[in-house]
Amino acid sequence: MSSFNDSMKKISSNPVYVKWFKDAWPYITGAVLLSLFQIVTLTTTGNPWGMTGPLATWGAWVYELFGGSVDKWYFFASDNMQTTLKNGFFADGGSVRNLGIVLGAFIATLFASQFKIKKIKSMKQVIAAVLGGLLMGYGSRIAYGCNIGALYSGIASLSVSGWVFGIFLFAGAVVGSKLLVKFFM
Amino acid sequence: MKEVMLDCLGEACPIPIVKSQNKMKELAVGDLLIVQIDHSCAMKNVPDWARGEGYNVEVEEVGDGEWEVIIEKTK
Image 1 (spheres, rainbow over the protein chains, first blue to last red):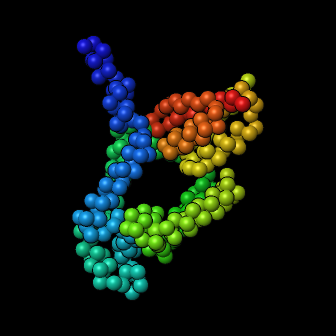
Image 2: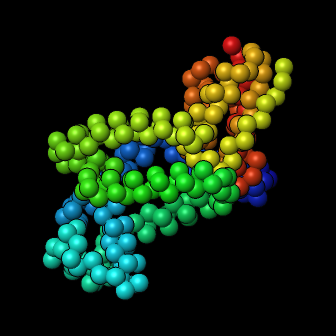
């Protein structure tokens, strides 16, 4: 009984806590859960799981906040897109899901007590991050998806495009890593 | 035998692992490399790489979201 009380007192050494909240789950657990949830997503919403599409919509909302208009932009011109833009954040399942992903990751980090606000190391790091973000954002729009929407959901839907995306994603990652090591380290 | 600190705080993947690999080449057998990281995926891939090389590895959580990966160059 006393050992039980001791382990309850010090939750950081409780084996259940360590297994479920502290240590990272094995890759295979993540893979199985991702597969299950993407099936749930596809069957309940009729669309495969995507991530960056809603991010572009967020960008449009921010732009509209400052008085801009994206009505004439090709990407936002479809009726579907216009409806999404008009109905707002909480009517857009993808947006709510993205928010959920960020909140979920945040809560998991807090449970593991691993939350930390990181220092910005150098101006170089800022430039690399901004440049990388812009390239990824731009790339994911001209490819109509990121490694979730185009790669993961593409392959899961038995679409050849997912595999083609994967090959070029790999090539891009090789070039990107070389550039990163050469210019930003 | 010496101990070398490698500051990778604030660095995201793949920088911590590349820096660790480069630093390791400069060390002699028996030396310790202590990699300071605060990026949770580096906390997985740096030890994975080092164990794969056959080095002795220990991970210590030194603060909230902050770790030291202690690697002994065994060969």
